[in-house]
Image 1: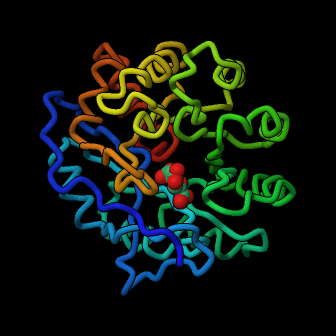
Image 2: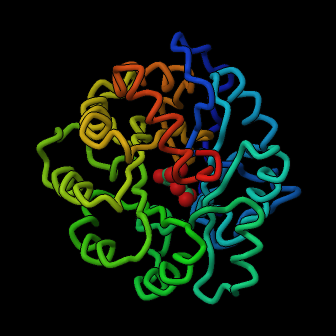
Length: 291
Ligand code: 0GY
């Protein structure tokens, strides 16, 4: 039996920070409901049901107007729950899918028509088998003509081996959760320096999400802030942010999503940086037709 996840925060606070119009949560998930959208048999965890309607209520409370849903390993390559949510969103939601190596061109087109703009590759031990590197090369070449990007999710100590592969891919690369460094080791640690080096190449983007994942000190995540702030101030045009709701595999201190929003005052300390992070940058990747 796959390990059972904890429920998401039952009553997130209303943030003090007013978010700019068009603000986007560029990393969150819908899970199930299992009765309608069963989880993948090969999953390594069983999430709580986290339906679109609950996410819509949360976003309204937080002041978020747009959403990027990211396919998580518990749904495998069955993107149905995500596509269903996008279809209900009236154009305010786009997605990042997961696909099999032998996915057909027709299926890629169906995903595109359904609002998908990228695919995700996992290299995270607790999520099961790594993406196959030959498949990554093949799929990156196939999504390039669609104008899509690849989202790459890895543990910090994998970057040294992965970087040469990532540098050869013909698509923009978006790195999840700041490359998952151990925040207690500080911003001078080797994996984070390696990430900063990668970011010097314009094709790389990074999500300054996951403070609650990389922290060792716990809420309010003071040890994680310098990582996010460094990325936002150095690479202001290629950073994204997301709540990561409903926070799969968080084992303790389930985050208050309102507090995560308020952390943005430290992560993106000016109005201009905040607007780039939450509005301009996600528009470039997910709603380019609106720019
Ligand atoms: C995340 C992080 C996690 C889960 C997944 O694909 C997934 O199942 O990404 C995690 O457990 O660290 O991005 O939500």
